[in-house]
Amino acid sequence: DSKVTLSGLLNFIDGLWSACGWERLIVFTTNHVERLDPALIRRGRMDIHVQLSYCTFQAFKVLANNYLGVTSHPLFSDVHHLLQEAKITPADVAEHLLPRALPAGEAEAEACLESLVAALRRARPETEAEAVAASPAAAM
Image (cartoon, rainbow, N blue to C red; front, side):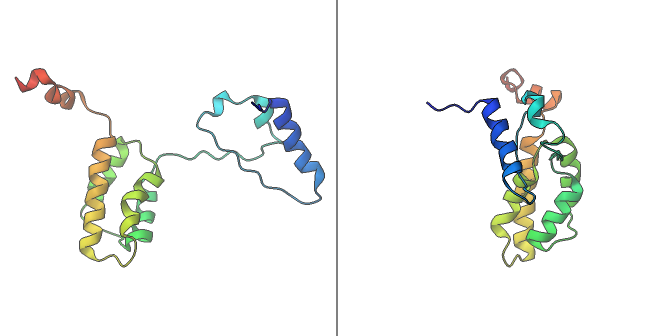
């Protein structure tokens, strides 16, 4: 088993900077920045930190336009409301729009948006009333 130590990683990163006369761009990603050692993410080693958030309605509109050529649709209001409740990434949103990205007719855009609305409904946290209604005791 070969294990990379923090010291080894820091030496490698610092070696990249000192070994070349031009700028290098290194991209690190994590879901848990709070677990990273401060020595790894200090200024000078990682100068720019970019927080990638969940999908906003503005981002959705860009995706809908890019993938479907749609700038407005009656389902946009549902998407807007559901995006405020659901925790879903732009990549997850695009997944519902991407399969139909090529010559999208209106019916195809409708199907994509309906698929997205269904996914957003599944992704949002269940309200207490919905949980009670879905419980086996409520069915009796």
